[in-house]
Length: 112
Image 1 (cartoon, rainbow, N blue to C red):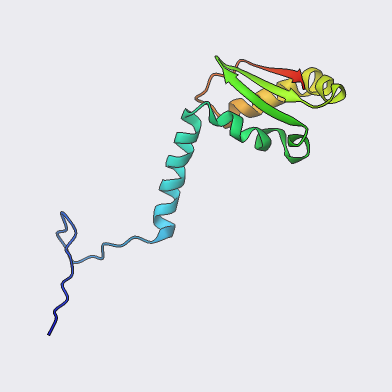
Image 2 (cartoon, rainbow, N blue to C red):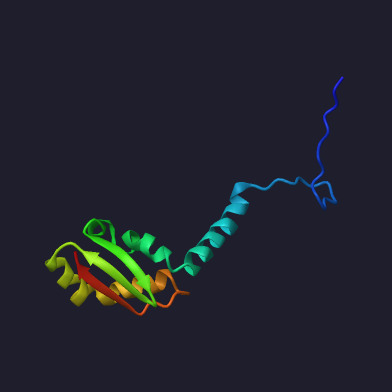
């Protein structure tokens, strides 16, 4: 005859269930992930396609992020001039909004 034993959780002092619903835990977990994401400047490179958009992501590549300057490789000269002359302030604003804890000073576009 075998008996099954239920383990009592550490510091448990009541009769309530010890499990949590995913819907209760998920917002907390996602907010923590967001905080980690904002504290790591190297993740700016990984999020570049989200910032620039899917249409331009295939023609650009974020290469490096050093001392607040993001360097982006651009495939052709037409796109280079459009991004550097027209869209640069908008892209900088999007990056600063997405990563408020990271100091982003400039974007340098390079042909390549």
